Length: 139
Ligand SMILES: [Zn+2]
Image (cartoon, rainbow, N blue to C red; front, top):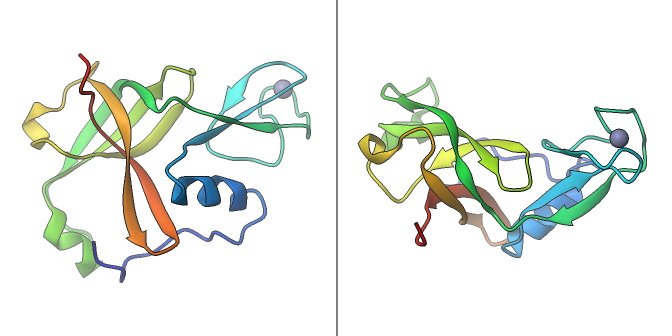
C-alpha cells in the first residue's frame, strides 16, 4: 500500500484510542453506559442521548454488507487510481453499528448486499492500520 494517500488524523482526541487499537488489529466501537446504545464513527458524546460518558468496546469484527458501491473511476488523487475498481461499503457489524470502509479480498462483482464479512486490517504505515472488510471465511 502506498503511503502518499490522505491519512486519518490520529492525534484527534476522540479518535486516538480507535487508531491505536486498529494498529494492534483490534476494532473498537463506542458504547454509551447511560442509554446502552452503540455508535460509530467515534464521537465525544452519545448521539442518542447526549451523554459524554461514552466508552470503547471491542468489536468481534464480523457483520454483513448493508449496502455498497463500486468505484470505477479514480478521484483526482492519483494514489487511488491503482485500486480501481474498488468497493466502498457500509458494513453492519454484529454489534449493530454501521462502518463505512472497503470490501477487499474478492472481486467487486462478488460483493452483494448481505454478504458476510469480517474485519481485515490494511497496514498502511508502521503505526497505522485501516480497518477494511473481506468476505467471511465461515459462511
Ligand atoms: Zn446514550
